[in-house]
Length: 521
Image (cartoon, rainbow, N blue to C red; front, side, top):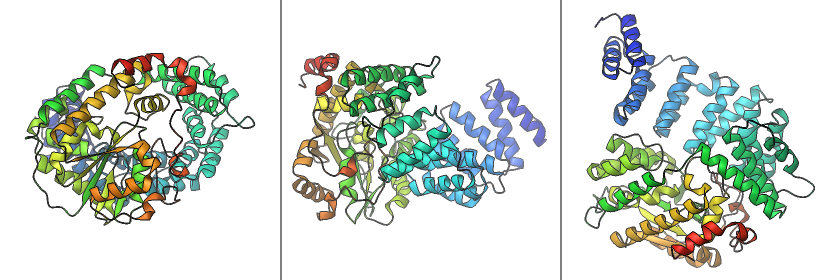
């Protein structure tokens, strides 16, 4: 093998094109032995190790890439994206600051950076990048759309709608902006998007992603106008498009869940006490069960930081099992879980989340699908609190059906799959109650909204802090809510959100029959 850096680079690229991974890795490592500051070689190593499902080696290459100085802004953006992929928000924040990317990137790429920050839960970083982009180009539709999204998270619905209207004036076919606007602004007979949405849905050749956004937006608008049959037709079309874009692997998901249950029995679930001053509070359960409301209540307490939804625990598991899992769990992660070092998982999770705690002793983590990982959470973090939100099966399933999720919840676009997944979830929660009865704290949504003060006292006592009246002020203007409930939770604690499915009952036969067959209604 030639020792010439240029020759090594060319040889490594040729081997990589031919998928001769071992030879490519050898070339790039030899090149880096000559010059550790050669950024492309680190990024090629990261790409190859990711393709080989070598999580730790891929992560190491990205970390080494982030140590290279004097990187051009566009190359630095690639490194920032890779850090985001590995859920290393603190390192990404430090890297972006060190590279001064908000001052160097063009507006279009600033919005890419904003999306990295937003998806990782750094609202301030996302807003900074968005405002920088708009200071340069007010006519950038993507920047106005990002501003609308971030303002929605802040609870500023009118300002959010105005930003989205600006985005649509600049780019009328911006499907995700129309979808977001349908969530931020309630449709009225005098002010709605129905005609425009129908016109765009009639156009041939729509990409499934755009079709889903437009159809779900039409459903939301027609629902507001109480045109329920037409709203159902729009929802059915959006769900079909979403199934094309994001098919659900029912067999693989069930196999992973069964593996978690088989591994985590009463004996295996016991973990090593980490004696850490930061106490995580995991909020788990199916989507649309009131988990955002619960986090909003906890976040009102002065001792609790709300971190929102992250994949940091899964990332810590991925590092321990040397497997890149692109969602909360998969079969490989579940299969390797029995051999993981859970003390290391716990320490890794706490190290990454510590900055988000802002010095407070408690921190919430509201990644709903973590219900599948509850046993691993209990083992890795014996001092963590695990709060489980549950809601009536029909209300939960229907609310999932009519929500356009970002990437999780692929089961929610088909009535029968939704009902079957609800049963799988119910059975898994029964398993966790059996093997760790003292670790799981169940909270009923209806009880929480009917008697919030009494429930909040019980929750605070379980978590280990004193109840404060501020916990009931969920309609406060402060804080960020980056979930599907962002436009609802600031209305306060509302008791009449159940039964939204009843106007659609005649369309819900497959779901209702399946839930009945499972003994859940």
